[in-house]
Amino acid sequence: MARILLLLGLLVLALFWAFGRRRDGTGQAPGGRDPVAPSSGPQPMVGCAHCGLHLPQAEAVQDGEGRWFCSEDHRARGGRV
Ligand SMILES: [Zn+2]
Image (cartoon, rainbow, N blue to C red; front, side, top):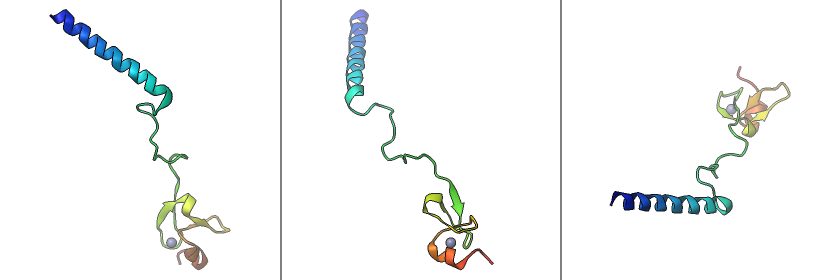
């Protein structure tokens, strides 16, 4: 009886392995990349020189002196006095 259960277990494992391999070729691989993850990885954060708000560098505005601002308005107002 134990041998039959062992054979059934091996058969189930083989079926899972075969279907898993077939799915790897076409669909999404298990444990693959997260589809909602940003493509560029972690973004550097910068702080606004006027109000101190931290935001991703891609959304920040930079002035001629290399300072970062959260918006065009704060860039026009300049750094913190
Ligand atoms: Zn700001």
